[in-house]
Length: 280
Image 1 (cartoon, rainbow, N blue to C red):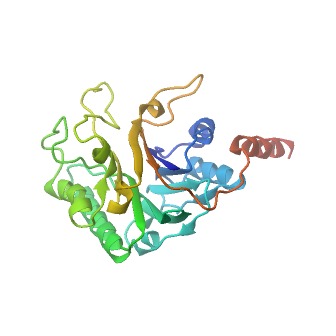
Image 2 (cartoon, one colour):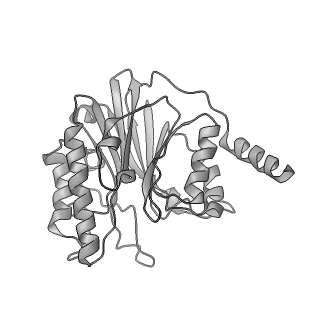
């Protein structure tokens, strides 16, 4: 089995990243696709700890004030062209390839820009969506593709409807992932009628949004074992804050990775680095 988790990291400060590391390192998934990373110290520090521990880390650094995607893998990866084909806010998507017994698996992460009611942020989001769809089309192939994302759009028929919050172009993007790019919503494949949310505004627990998604090529739906939300990421641990204000989304695929990596414990790496810094 190949297992993956996508989670909105929330552009952590260095202090928050130090608290996130134990819970991220304890995850059992083969691949973590972390959205809403930043060029700040927190995201950079997390990438460095996992990289030093032997994980394969793909972390295109966003411009200052921007957000991006980081992929942390226990499996050997090669670069996928999707990341380099995106020519607008390119750090908001990245992709790698993992070799499996079912053939190469393309794993892509994406993090859409947010918007408010202003024309500037609306145009920015529209422009990114257009650029991303072009990159998807230009890199289309026969390989399995798994897209894990914080879309910041909701599906038509979402409960609650959140009427007036989303524009037609946002619903069209969600639907177009299936109709234009032939990527199925894997959560809906498993749970066609379930009402579940991955993010809620404070004090509005019953008024949430399903913002975090997994889409896969038709060949992947045949390999899909499970796709489910892990709401524990929104709950504080023992003496620890919540890992994120988003629920994680887990995907389990019926295939086996060909090249697992040999890694050490990122916590040990971080502790050693801290000790050396203290001695200096």
